[in-house]
Image (cartoon, rainbow, N blue to C red; front, side):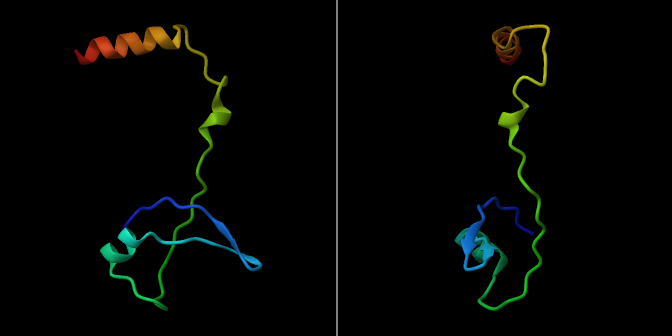
Length: 70
């Protein structure tokens, strides 16, 4: 099983997706072959801005994380 991210596109009166060539090759897919697709809507994390409050500034948090990696 391959996990891919793609965009939906208008296709006549429907919405379609394109399967990238790398996924087609790795799964050995062919034209007119039946497949099962699991659909999960991507979360737009930009809408979460401002919902999470930290006691420290983001710069202070970044500095502490960098210090831990040294």
